[in-house]
Image (cartoon, rainbow, N blue to C red; front, top):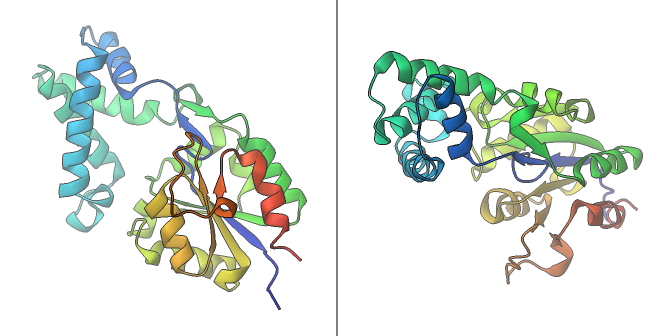
Length: 240
């Protein structure tokens, strides 16, 4: 007999909310306050390059190398703007500090229209909710200002956990907090490897949120969601 579902774990970025405008636009807006005039397109391109370098060289915010989320992100901002011709150290530090704190503001994030309704539906089905996210320690503040924090019994960020998806270890920490076996837990996320494959490999009921309808061929139809509106009926199938 199948064990009924008790918990739903959630990814956050690009699942429940997204950055409101491009990183380039947000960086340029802050730089402009400091008297700098930069091109959002150029800053975006530099950011993507620097972000890839930092993610490769200092994975998971460089925790194992003595960094943390704040120092990691400040480095990303400084190196991005340096590539765009900003060289004054004090200016780079000021913009980097300001941007780190700016991203705790609701102005910088957009909650998807189907997110709150899905969270409410899950709660009304009697399911408990938790977060497993490759995010830094600002996540609690961000979820709070976006009006989502109260839905969750716990949050696990990769910065706090010291390990990031797709490592199964971060899901093991979540299962410990849930206090139930993996087959009584579901996970929702937008990343094929980090969210779907890893959760499934542990016996969790992983669902891939495919907002852009990319249609991964090896994801069964019943594991794929085009919208979170589809989620409650899928979960109910695992609750009896």
